[in-house]
Length: 102
Image (tube, rainbow, N blue to C red):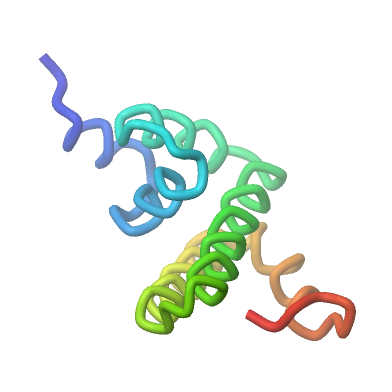
């Protein structure tokens, strides 16, 4: 029998990245692992994961939870470093004056 830890190891995402998907999508952890594994296989999927993490950062900021926002910024940084397809759009968004600052 395959365990959730086995699934996590095969999906290519960190525990923190999976937790961000759980938080954003309100899914059980195993479903978030499956979704993350699927999304991480394409450039568009990687951009979607990045957008989820950015949304989680904004939600933490809106909830006045700077510790959570900072932790998610670290998750975002690590995700973008590990998934270069997500970097291009992320980099553009940071300097886009129309977008709220993360």
